[in-house]
Length: 298
Ligand code: SAM
Image (cartoon, rainbow, N blue to C red; front, top):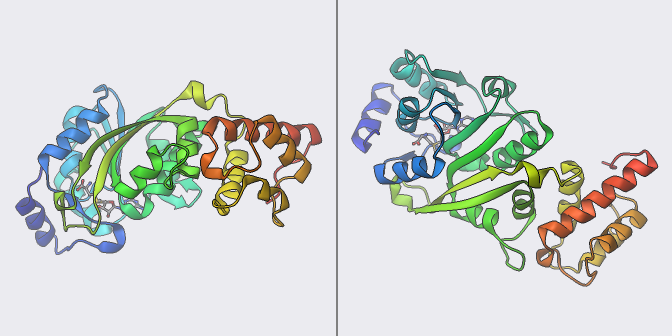
């Protein structure tokens, strides 16, 4: 792995400095990089997707362990640096661009490159970590791509939301979605000092395995997402209040029946409702839509 002085040298030789808008905090702690790789496990034959290879420190390790690595870097300067240093590696597919084509779509070049299935291993840029994790889960659920496992470092606050259980302030749509589609394994905490430059917040290593059998019990990921944003929009209010919400994406009678079928007490707050109850309510809403031949109102 690259040391701090090596990263500085690579950047200065290329006339670059860390760009905050791209979340460029480079991992300089070899021990933590080993922990990330050992939590990721994996078979050498796996295709690995690295989002944000930066100066290529983790990329070098991935290239020596896995048959194929797909790396996408948004920063043109870093992309050129990587092309110069790692461009001759035959098992590397290096892409210049944004991993997210939009908030709702993963870059199609990446989707094609990781076929038929891949594992994501990355020190994720803070700014896109949440939409990227959500999109990987949703697109895998839809069968549009297959990211079986994601192992990454993310900000501690996001890790807290991913592993939260009902009842706490961190529990929300992200915890429910992850709990219904995957299994989360927390890894080591990562202090801010493990990065150059030092970010303001601490991070954590975490792994999410997509759980196909769990995911198959969910009828429609979009209905679930709409129900969750409705339920958590006013998380301090009783869940029954969503039945009176003006801009409700579901017919009120369907929503009432769905909450009833899921045995959700209307006096509860959203933060006390278990993921399986949200799934039951979302599945019931989806059935009502099928029965009426309609879709979800936007
Ligand atoms: N992999 C390096 C490491 O482990 O030290 C760098 C990690 S740094 C936290 C995040 C990297 O993601 C930066 O290289 C940044 O330019 C890149 N990046 C930021 N936003 C991106 C995006 N939307 N798509 C692709 N790469 C992105």
